[in-house]
Length: 96
View: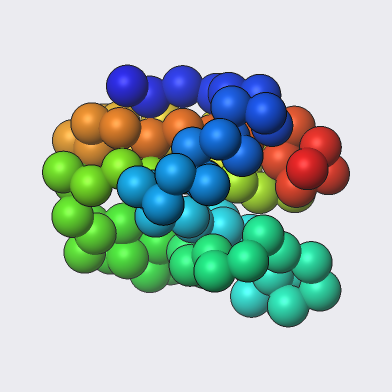
């Protein structure tokens, strides 16, 4: 399942403890404001694809960015390379 979900659904999944949380913004953005325990995989860096490929495709992921634009691109990429369960926070952290 690869889809954009509401902040309520996102929080419910996050609270379950079954998901790995990924912030696709820059490290600086993450340092300023973040959802706790998020792994930074900056989509603008040249090593983004390498970082994503190093993750276990069979695990469950939650992803977010500032407004939903970058995480939407990341969601599409993760689907293309074989991830099975990734949910994107609708509206990004600004909606959190």
